Image (cartoon, rainbow, N blue to C red):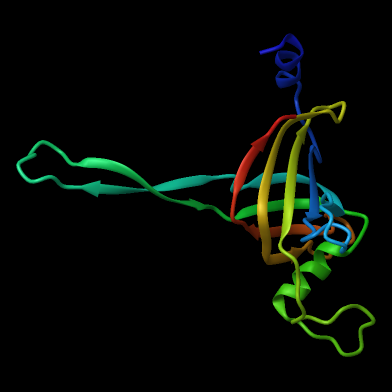
Length: 177
């Protein structure tokens, strides 16, 4: 481990120290068959993130004549629902993304109606130090929103716009900071 990594880990993280970026992976890049990179749709800052968790099912194999225990083998990996809490973003893209998946329709709205096709997104989560340098990065593949909770309306409170956003996904990876 480098010395600057040791210093960064000792730095306290306060407030909105988790930067979350939402990206769409194009199928064929620019549409002409040439590969393209991911397209960043929006980003937000969150105060708390839970559920960065993967667990493996264990397969127990019994062997005849082997009375002292069973053989243990790894099985399918399952991922927990990731919950982004107390977040701020300058756009309403996360609400529109949720709305497309949920199928909520509003015929009087000028925004896209629900029930349409919605992309599963790549979500990158970066834990930052006080100087907003990334310390640790995680990636969620093919994420989909399953719950959206707005902050409570209270004029005397300093609540934030997004109270909770729950995401299910199909892959959890740690990336270099």
